[in-house]
Length: 360
Image 1 (cartoon, rainbow, N blue to C red):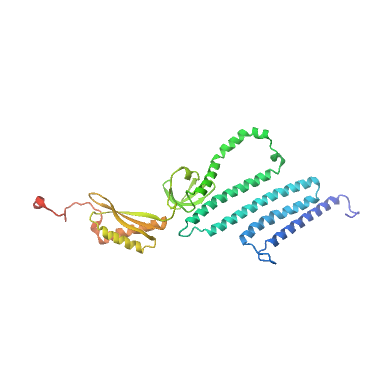
Image 2 (cartoon, one colour):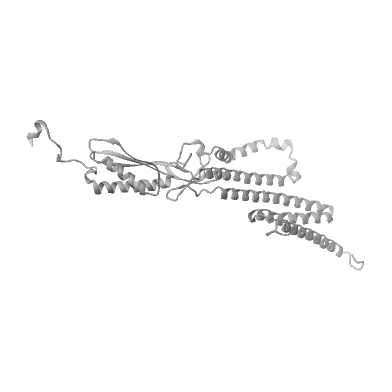
């Protein structure tokens, strides 16, 4: 500093010089990141995919560049201030590393989901992968956040040097906390079990508590089932491990469905069978596997006819069953009206024989 300047100016000049060094180092670090992660190929450096570039670029620019500046400032600062600056840089580095890991996990999840879409006909393998992926991604996020918080707390001497006496005195409190978080931990463990054993998957068709719907979301502690009427049924993960439920797409999405009709005992079963085959051949939801008509029950007044049909999934099967039911009823009413179920009040058309024939 020039000799003519007053002494009180010296601290400000030193602070300004130190800040300038820190800003210059941070700017150099940011420029290095931009060069190494270009938007387009640059001087032989290939450009990364956009999602991966953004996942790396944001934490490196917004966290690690300031960390480099803080470390540079700490080198020229007073010993007391240097320790505080290095501590702040360490905390920022932990935050940036956690942010970077979370971004990379999100990119990996999005790429795997794009490679295994569920909006296809045969999506069993895709639903298996996505179910495991979503549960494991949630566990990874929780683990990264918990480890980052723990690492940050461990940088403070008061937290790092917790003695055995403090642990012993906190035993009862720790037991109370463990009991309080038991439901949360049990659901997290249940999520891992579901991801591995997979009693349910994303987009599975299930019947729970008497409700038919599809598994829309599997979160860390709960499952959302989208019911057919657009309602959402939210259940804890442990429910699917402790209680019975129906899973219509456990192995594959193909399903069989029935259409039951009550007809007169004189109904032409062969004609109904031919009509069912014709209806199925014309229906786009029939998968060509099963189309059968059987008489499954009779009584003194009527008989029950069952039409058995098949479709690729539960949604198509429901539509197919409705159209088959409408078509068979219309066919019977139009072509064979006498075959509709009825209560007989006369004996018209009943053949007579023996002594009763002379009583008419």
